[in-house]
Amino acid sequence: MNRQPRAWLQRGGTLLGLVAGLLLGLGIALAVAIYVTKAPVPLMDRGVQRPSSSPAIESERLRNWNPNANLSTQPAAPAAPDAAATAPADPVRPLADDPIGQLIEQRATTAPTGVVTVEAPPLVDPFIYFVQAGAFRTAPDAEAQRARLAMLGFEATVSEREQAGQPVFRVRIGPFDRRLDAELMEQRVLGNGFETALVRVQR
Image (cartoon, rainbow, N blue to C red; front, side, top):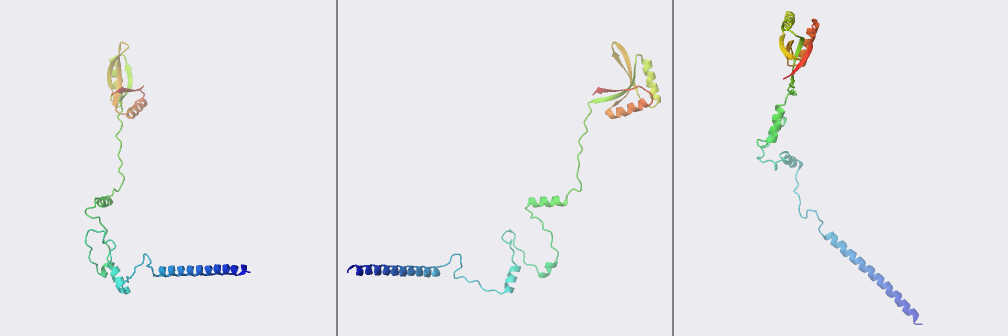
């Protein structure tokens, strides 16, 4: 007989606790919502109102605004009248204390018109060259050969040298500083019927 009232009381207590917990949760949520709505929002200007300005005043203020005013060490020049806007602008020149800008301007105004080529100095040939038109055992024979060459316009000389214990008289044209010049002379002498040899001597 006593079991039914006790079960009813237990059920009633559980229901009452559930309702009380629900009400407590709703109260906490309401308090949090009120706190959030009344708290100041970060990154917002509180109590600051920008003065209202007409488009004409804003346009006039922006027309005289210089974005580079804080970067220049010289005072800003006064605004020019509207008629100056149609005049051609002068080329921008570097400041007097800007050596890099002066160097760039100088190179731009004095740019070379052509490429300068530097020729390498010619190599010095360690030899000098002769065109030999014969070698003779006697001086008269060598002089006769020299005379025949002179008649054809070739200037030759006779030089004596001892070879195998015997004197040898050589008839030579030259000297020539370049091998090419000696070879050209040799071809001319050969064309006139003389036997020749190209001789080179250390300088």
